[in-house]
Length: 386
Image 1 (cartoon, rainbow, N blue to C red):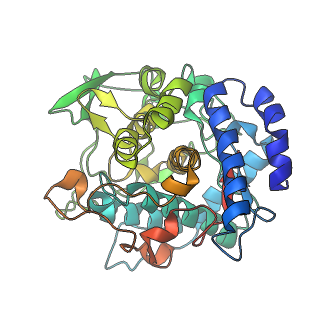
Image 2: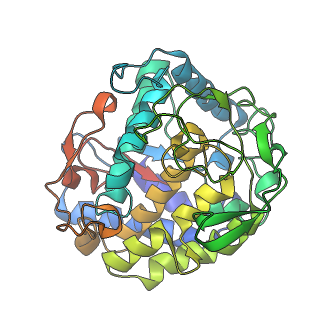
């Protein structure tokens, strides 16, 4: 669909598929309009990407059944291909999908609570999309999971209803003696997430036989043992089922339409937006952390190995969309705005991140500068969201 046509059709799109998310629908429409106006006035940031050939990322529930199955099949295809990471570096990586998990694990403490957090994950999610397209023949683009659409009832959403067009359902009920999950840790919880109706292996939907090979490093489930790898990176081969405990308790508190829109509207500077988007502080769970702990389980609730659950990439596409909406409320001043240092929560204290800092995804993509991740129409990118 032509970009201008997309803008003109936006009210009709929002009236149907997006009816449950009115506040952020308006912000998304404004972002598209502002981006079109900005490029008309300033030109395109990349000579190869224009609003005539831009890729359009859509919400999972807006895809047809065939489109969802095509995406699911591409993910499974990636997991069937041999890994590219040298065994000497990550011996637990056994397939191409594991390459992405291992990269995230290896860099976890330098890509969270840092100035490169949202840029790094934008590039990481895009590189995954390119692997699906270039290595597995996927014709579509990376879908996103709009948390607000399912915040009040995630188990019956198109994402998690366990049908053959879902990203699989909840885990079987199993929690042993664990009645809650502590955030940020079980030992020192600021937030206690009550156990839900899952906790065990996922047995429904397309990923019911999905095998997790890496980690866990920081498991939230007390009955899941840490990886025996003494390095702490969890690279030891450790095959097991994928576990989930889908948490409506979490999503209904921090993932509603108003939670996303207020994050964007109330924070005009990058630092508070960046900080509140990411994480857990004094009993507050930002939309990023809330998405992970709505999924929960193993590896979804593991800070390091969360990409081991394929919903990770739909979740982070929505994180990226939230940033994209924030940027394009004021593209002149926000597109290249950066906040944060280069260490996790500035521990140990370190310098501020800069646009010249490098992002290296190893076997998954070329090293690029942080500035190359700041616009979805520049660097290696050429996409927008609806």
